Image 1: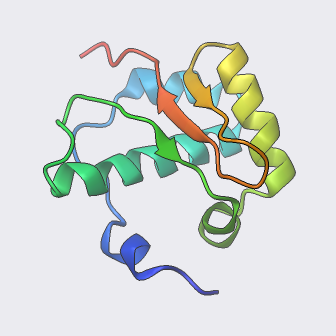
Image 2: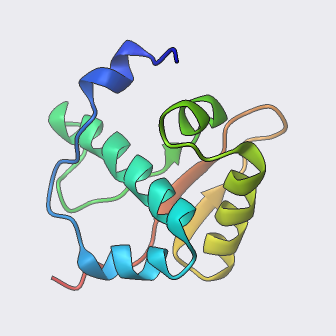
Length: 112
């Protein structure tokens, strides 16, 4: 398994985890929770670099390679979950064209 060095350095979540957000994502399966954790970890990298505030969410690129290697989420499952989460209003999905990783932003309120 080959993992990018930037990923190894940012393998943590900055800021409090919202149980409301995890509950909402868990209603759509373990792979939806894995997508949530991936997005929060990438936001943790931005927070540690002082590019994002602890209470904010931003659009995060979701590449298939890292999801398959680290989180065991296959490409077809990724797209199925991203579309489902967008339909249910949990994320804002931004498509960047064929062959380019989509971007997702968490929309679920934190409630604390």
